[in-house]
Length: 510
Image 1 (spheres, rainbow, N blue to C red):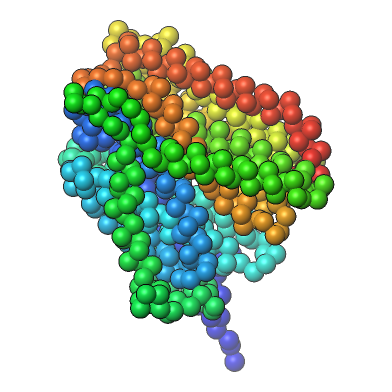
Image 2: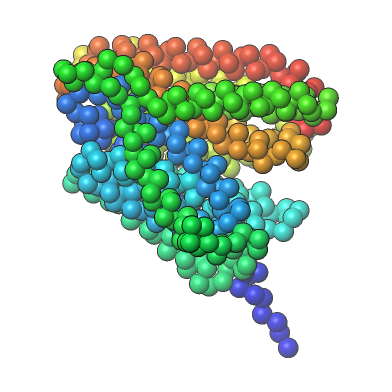
């Protein structure tokens, strides 16, 4: 008599079958997210804020607030999932809200624009933290396949990030913005269909269900929590719309006289509160814990700096590509957003093989050295853009090769830092506060967008001219890129010089 494996125990290519349903669900979700992001800055500059002289400034402010809230929302969404509705319900709720947001974004109207962004923010808060956590639940504790499973999953993210700007950018350029945004919405729905299919086939077993003590059917104000949470999620969208639209205070002539960004104020208060609480935790910790916690905070700060420069790809670098890169016959400015993911796909396996070979030779660099080198690569990548002006033609356009090389170097830096950072936070944090430290780590991406907004405002080109390119804009951008390069290289050198001390503080954590 033969025994058939339960559906959730069946494997494909040596991994739980559920991994590949999550792989495609995340691939299409990232398709929707990056497809929309590739168009967002250009859409704001060319449509939403077209009539404003300070359209770049307004775009930078809204883009920064959007990015900050997108990542901050994951802390709230993850907590609700853990305590009440579970991962499956969170993923469905988040995916539906994001789909609606993308379709609303296809409506060329300012009110619809801010409402759409707010729906995507709320949806991402439920979807993003849970789809990644779901992958980990498919493996038993101590399963050696888990790391490679996450690597496969990470490839899905980057395949979506590579293809989406190419297709959504092409549709937007050829047929109109709403077609590009609409395709992003279809991508999100496709991801949900893959996830739903996996549930129907039982490949997830009993994983991702609401917690036993979560009381999903408990009534609050006479409404079951399973219904109340989606209602509150939808109701919160107008409030978030208001926060996003608080980027400006306009004078009678339509110009800015004061920046009153409520989101900036909120994040400053959050940042101060977290720093004070971290200082208290470190003060109360044991000596050995104190050392490691200090390093965990340092790593988070370094990662915030890196992401702050990296995420310029969706804002300032996209505008630079539109105005000062010779893209004739190659791709559109929005499509250049695919270059980072393209390089990640190409480089991920070779770089991981290098670490494996160095480990066998007992020469694999410790985490602080990798972080220092990652910041150096980021700085050099921006220096490549800074010197691109030397090759500009009479119209202020520089060869596409500069952008290609820049993204290559930035992607190498990302692979030096991003894959190792998350695991080191868990290794360095005492078990009693590891969840809090993970929340701080994710919030670092939210604070990185505050850096993006600050830089975007400094490099704002104040003009309503639709053909903004030329020597003057090239000078503004290249001067800004040179300053970013110096800051990033300086931070990298500082980390490398401090690495021996950081290594001692880390103890046996590699």
